[in-house]
Image 1 (cartoon, one colour):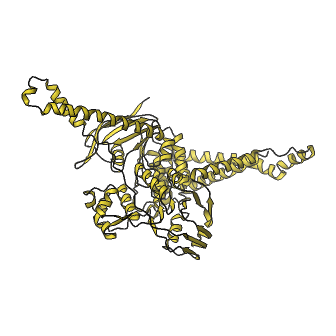
Image 2 (image 1 turned 120 degrees about the vertical axis):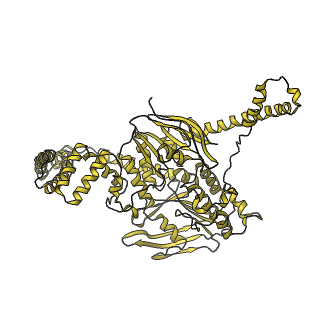
Image 3 (image 1 turned 90 degrees about the horizontal axis):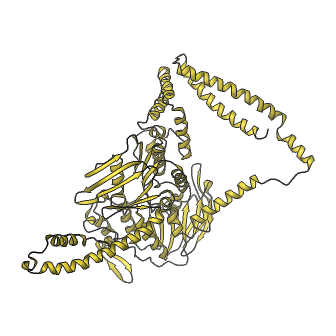
Length: 620
């Protein structure tokens, strides 16, 4: 199998901090590779180096000649003031350039420019590209092609960035956290697309189901080295545990040998006279190998929740709307102690609004929330930290509390508490605006839990947290004695945490599903199969007279006349469309604006009439 990318002895560091050192691996055509590592170990930096966005300290990155690479950054960047369609076409691809010029020419009204643009579209074979681009944007929920990108939400910007990468049909996809800010429906669509795609894939994601179902190979960055595992994420977990166990056994053997050699080295120099120099060199090699630290530093989530009474909250007839958009319509529910609920729904349906209303951050239009006196909310917002960006980490936490109560009479200082969230003494002196995405998430989580909430509300907590920290958070929430509402697009996270699901639908409807997300997904699939089977099932066998009547009613006289007329109309429109295309190719310039408009009208009419012809042909 052909190698598309070869990485040899790649090294990258920031100051005295080495992210990865002398890593070497190759990517074969058709590989689908997931990169996993803890936050701060260089996953995003590695992708940026491979995409040419950042330079390495040493080593080589070699793509096979002619490989078309598509890169999705973790935080998409668009030209300020651009429209959705302009941003989607912002590339150096010849077809994208042709469509961009054609759209601009139509908007300008300049007939000469339109003639040239149509000729360029024909030369670049860009008509199909234009249709596919608009279909993809619509499929991803970006229906207003002239909306300004500056006003798009995080999820909309991510979907637009995905469309911009996918539409170019690259040979090699480099994706950095492609599922962040996407709703579950779009994630499942992307998952299926990547599984079917022939493109080679190298991506970073914390979505474990996504890794498991899409990837055929996992590369782990650990202790500045890269380890490759041939298999999906589940296979990687098993083999990683075996690797660490084998390394621990090897390290114990090295240290035992080192103790013996240390005794020999400690003797008088004359005792070593005449001894082979290789033994002395071997001693120093053993000493270096023994310094490997296999101890994993993980976040410690052991803050206790405060007491919560039997009354949690009651929602009575809650209604909320913004203009014509209904968020909640007569929502009534009584929340019980210990409940853990997942809140799902398409982007923009009102999930964040719902949890803000529950906390009293937004008023209801009607109805009321009755919250128990002992309830203490802990709110992890997807909007992130609200600290002064120019404060140091430790100062920001100290302002909230001089000491942190962990339960059982144990209190610790902010500096000790922050170390449990992997902030070293040096890291605690960093200014907040310099923190990475993962560090900001850990700090946000620390400030929520330090206040001993007994009702946790987590709005997209999985964004920017590494897989290891997500697993620890899951274990913490499983043992959490209070209540939890979690909004998340991470299906694995939802499956491990929640008892039941609130499904937010359009028109303010909330359905309560008894089970986790996988249960809900299985129910949806089963219902879809039942509906499909019902549509295909033959009706009870009719009597001959009834059969004759049904055959007569199958296609009425009026419909048959319409069917025959449609065939002639479609043929005439096809001829007119072909004539216009020949005119454009010949470089005609007589009334080009009107002819261009007519060409677009014909395409729309053909779509409409062909669809109707197909409907009638099934009855003919």
